[in-house]
Image (cartoon, rainbow, N blue to C red; front, side):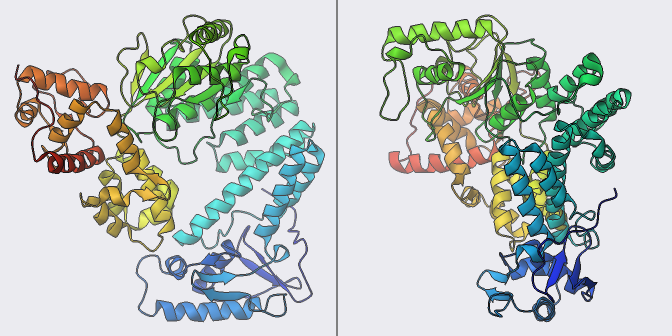
Length: 638
């Protein structure tokens, strides 16, 4: 793709050095390109420039230069490269102070916006988006185009054989692509689609699965009077999605395609409009969402096709139920023109919200006002029905609203059936997507999706998104040990990734060793205020006391958490029928997994997920100490 020459913006005083990362690594002084030395020296400089005005740890610089096996002289050699970089950079503008300083956090490079193209790029992109937010589309297009004019090609493409530099380059390229999409949509909105057509085509060829690029390309072709080509872009994308991912294009893309078929040359709007007419109250989707392709396709087919009004997605805490539900809700704009809303049915501490409180939130979202006069403000500022009569009025008003509209409601983290009875639609086209740890067997008829542990490949993909594909490739065997020690639980894999992203010095093999230790694994799965143990403890508190005792006994049966009915009968000290009831109670609660296909109770191999198994063993030890080893619950031998 051809781009205009680089504009350096304010380059500073004469003799100052201007650096560029948006393309090959270059440095210019007074328009002349400067030699940057041997490859290892350029890797050090690129890593420092990719993190301007931020301390860069020595270990990060070492990994960028020697990713596999640093020599014994690595630190000394690094000091030589740093010294050469200081000579090239010169002093900072504020009184001749050192530009590259070393502190407790590593090497800190001080550089101004006019001296580095990525800083200038970020400033222009922010100004462009601010202009768009004010409604100044022409100003936004001009500023975003100015930012894109700094882009000379794939960032740092001459140094991408270094995994550390490649990671930074991928991050920069993702930012550039997003700005290009913003600019193209602004030009289309201004009726100047022709200026974006060729560039969009080139980028789609390089990023064929990036849907927003495809949508902008379709719109630019259509606005330019090339309807047949626009429709062909969609057909190619649909076939690619089916072949590569086993998915259909999103409802937004499908709606764009249908509008082009029906409106001929009148299609002028971007596929993803910045203005959503229907009320939408959904959390932002997580960038780390991976896998779950079959379950996502099932959700989209069932909810998008109008086959079911209620879908229950179940699985243990941390299995990714909420992320899957939110992902599906974001993709289901077209089938639900009257809005989409996400409501948590638990508070932050894991306790259940009252049905009246949840119903009041739904009533405020959809604008029901019939019973509002009877809702006093509580101390927390929420409005709930003051009386049983007010609750009944609001519940009936909610049912009437659902009967008249076509909306999607996500009721997230439901503790039991009673929490949602009366909230589910009795008639009409509204749909409710329920997520719960247990299977909520008392709800019927519903479409059920149970989330199993993801495949190793999906768990590795999630870990790679958080720590970088380059680091994952340094020790794939250790990475596999990490995700398996997490039992494949997405929350645990995500926490591991967040920890490793901060502890960049920590070898994957060493962290895998920590997770393999049963006595330390749960202590390792903490990142800031996110704790796997706390999430598991919340599910543990949901269990009835007899179920907790049974789970503690079953968790001690085998190192891998697997057991048969015969072994459960012995461990529980009860008869076969009582053991079956106890195990099936834990299956209902989502604490024990069972085979997917039909099999007799005697032949089935049941499993307690690894991290829940470790937690249950901790609780069993604690409880045994408190009660002197006596069992907490006596099961009938019958």
